[in-house]
Length: 95
Image: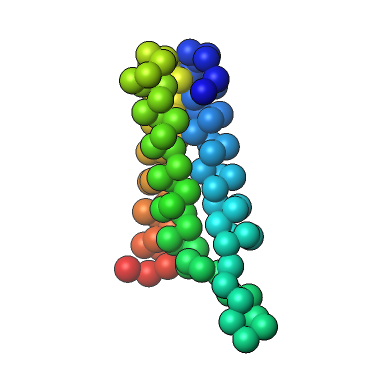
């Protein structure tokens, strides 16, 4: 892991990691059936799976490296994305 203890760096990591995972799941992970490509998971599932991607760096920064400011930034962005997910889930995707 990168050895920096900076809140802004944590915010950056907490934003970039889920976005990269989401793009990967949306664009790369597909199933080909009868010559047509289909996404493996629906968009709501991809959003949740991308949030789970913050667990490993959060754990590494909080326990292994003792970089609490960076870990707090990652955790804050995870909560922000979780709130955005809940708003999107209930407003756009239905209940």
